[in-house]
Length: 99
Image (spheres, helix red, strand yellow):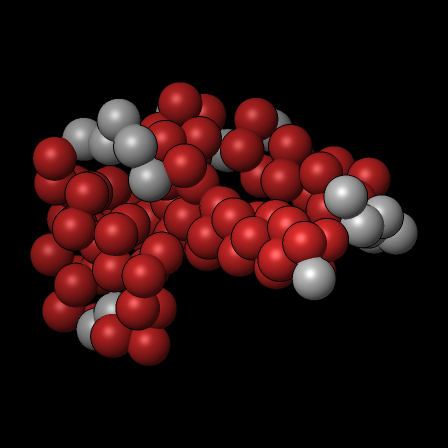
């Protein structure tokens, strides 16, 4: 596989975001990054973030803010976005490796 010169830094950031201190449960952050095993109310938002982030609306987030609050929503959204970016990076590196 093609070497990723920033891999250790990226992995460190991901580890801090997913497992570090925060207002949300680390298991929910991990689930958001992976897009699996999510509470049903978060599934639609996380799926939208991972597949079509440009389609996420204020209303999508507002529906969940009453339950999760601003800080937990931020952590969940960042976790989902980082997980999606990691998945895309690995897919691209694998494609380059096969080329």
